[in-house]
Image (cartoon, rainbow, N blue to C red; front, side, top):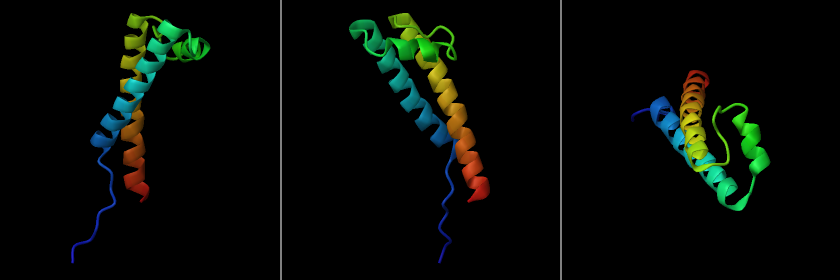
Length: 85
């Protein structure tokens, strides 16, 4: 009987977390632009994600930062999980 592997694929996990981060930040930026919802939070995140502001272009800039940040954090999480599991 083969041993069951509980390892995470760091690339796939990073891509998944990056995609979720992209969608969340883009949605927040667009909601802030059209409905003035979460504007203070957009400015707070914009202190880390340079260029993220409550505009359409700023929403895509922030989403670009978020996908990169999400990928790196997801990759690191899966890598550490596999090392300690």
